[in-house]
Amino acid sequence: MRSTWALAAAEPDRTARAFYANLFRIDASTKPLFVGDMELQGRKLTHTLGFIVDHLDDPQALLPAAVDLAQRHVGYGVTAAQYASVGAALIETFQQLLGPEFSAADETAWRQIYQGLSDAMVKAAYAA
Image 1: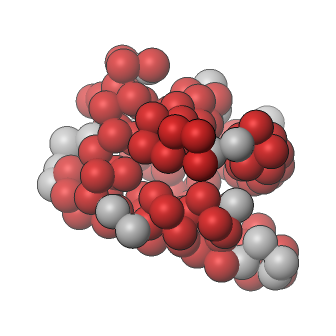
Image 2: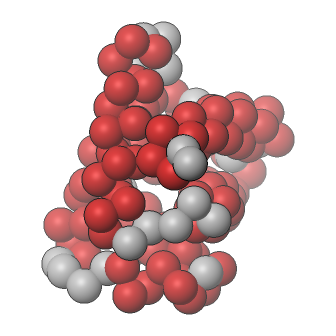
């Protein structure tokens, strides 16, 4: 994950633009959630992904930050179902931008980490 993120993070604006284009194509219901400055939003996205990668070995820092993010996203109108769309857009973005440098093993690692984090985030933010 660290090596693929280093490649994507080398061009953060390109990564963010590709991610949001993929997200809005995959799930049009997400587009109205983004009404502000998309460059700023892109910087937030790449910062968050960098934080995740930097804290893969530090769940005591990573999980509380993810839960806090999820709880804030409820206020923005994000639904639990949209987490799957974000995951799909993330994987598609890496596939597009990194091509063969994004191996099957890389994809599996990203899917596993994303699924674990998104499960924790959804549980924390949408618990009945």
